[in-house]
Image: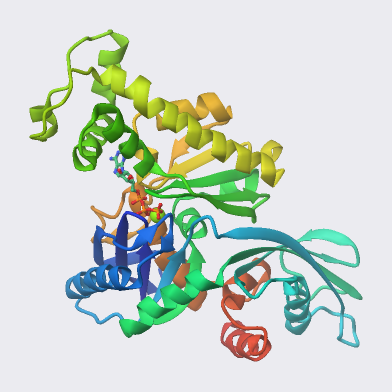
Length: 424
Ligand SMILES: Nc1ncnc2c1ncn2[C@@H]1O[C@H](COP(=O)(O)OP(=O)(O)OP(=O)(O)O)[C@@H](O)[C@H]1O
Ligand SMILES: [Mg+2]
């Protein structure tokens, strides 16, 4: 039995979260042995805007997680998100090289490589290549073409690219802390890995991670990742609006928003009954004086309009993806912002699709704190990492996990070497 220690660092706009998990080859689970989340500094809308500050907050989070786990973090998977993320679906086609015309792993690697060959400016870098489906001699819908007979192999891939500058900044932060980067993972993909079910992915679903400074979107159609993007708006804007609307500090505004969201049922009941009682600062735990305002005035007058705006951008992205008719499972919303009062109800009204809140639930160990929508992408890092390290076999769609982050030059040799470990 092989145990593998897997670490993840989720550098968000409001928090840095570090996670240490143990994945066991034989069991299906992930045991969390270390976790920390602390406010992040120097990160805005998913982008590192101050390397020194970001390094200091990542360092602090890593140290705390190491202490809890009793292990030093030497390497980690890391999230990347924000409006610099973009995606494209690209097609690759090759002739099957084998004289018996049976597709072998080399053909698959070559066809993915052919699909990867997109024109890319040198300010962008590919962070993910996911095969969506293969076809052999024109017959499509194939998950794993290895062993099939044919002369022509084609693949449809989903490619996610990111700003090279931001990736370099993340690398600088990790280098300075002596942590080896095991791979960048789009935070939307990481969150999807921890909250989506296979059935949802098969039917078609949009994962929407509503963070503090950005919203990450991943659309799955027929089981395959088909669209990825990120919008520069998040739940922090709601707190800002409350601060401006009530003329209170951002700190108090955040507490008011959390109070209303965490007491959602009571607040909604009061709103329904047209209760005119004013919000009391002492109940919320703030010392600042509040204007005379009812919960209803804050929810209807300040929070809901911003939620509507957030969903209008989400809807725009879904329309842009051209998959709006192919996601009957609707939206799975996650990230801290998914817990905002009215977020589910307003979403259903605006997007007109089913919506549920995605909570990560599969791990064991020190998980009480982690089983929260805020940490979907954090937990997703270790699931993703464990899939990459040994969980998946060498079949079809799992090629993507092996192909990540390798430069074009050494891709074939590295992948071949890795494949040898997976093949029976
Ligand atoms: N219980 C809650 N109810 C409502 N909002 C909440 C709750 N808990 C957290 N939030 C909000 O969620 C946001 C933070 O979410 P999250 O931790 O997912 O962001 P992040 O990962 O740091 O940022 P990003 O992904 O945008 O870079 C904050 O704006 C916070 O106010
Ligand atoms: Mg996040």
